[in-house]
Amino acid sequence: MDQGEDANALDLDVRVALADRLSCDKNLRAEAWAAWRDDRFAHGSNVNEAEYWLDVEFVQPCPEDWPTED
Image (cartoon, rainbow, N blue to C red; front, side):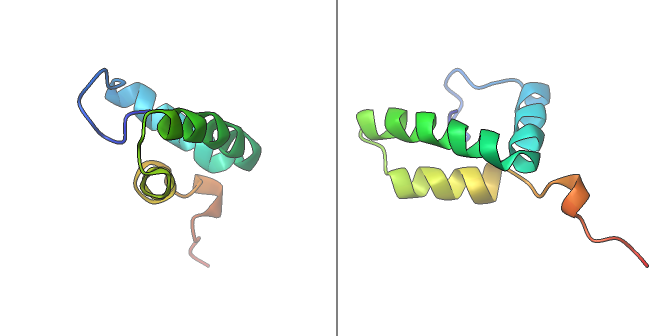
């Protein structure tokens, strides 16, 4: 993942599909984060900022968790 940077970014459709998948599968999100965290750490990135970006800016709430009108 690229934290929204332009370098080698995924196209929008792929990004949306990935964000949706990670938001609805907590185990997959944890596995993806573990791999990406190690990559971010190895490249000297701020791991806390990367995790915040993943959880708050990239991954959106799962549609199943959206509030419904009663």
